[in-house]
Image (cartoon, rainbow, N blue to C red):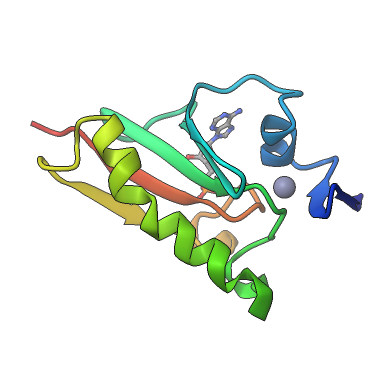
Length: 118
Ligand code: AMP
Ligand code: ZN
């Protein structure tokens, strides 16, 4: 069920909201007021992080005008997060799956950051 927690939309049934609320474990590598970045549990690359807004947004299709700064921040912070994982210079990919047909399985917006290939 969706509710507002300290002015932020959260969904108790959502896996990523539970990670953000620290009700579930994740290997967090970066966190600020707006986003959290943690390691993907089933990585597809040597480095595979998920950059996740703290606000529960179902997918790119569900963005509201007030989410503009949040989405910009996810991308603005990606180079710094890549640098933390030492892949900023070697190279990395940023990917968002939108809806089931594209492979989205967790319906809380997230940006995949993959890298670390030889
Ligand atoms: P997507 O397919 O775009 O919805 O991406 C969801 C991602 O979440 C997948 O790459 C999963 O491997 C990852 N994932 C699922 N459960 C967890 C978890 N408990 N902690 C971290 N990552 C997870
Ligand atoms: Zn959520």
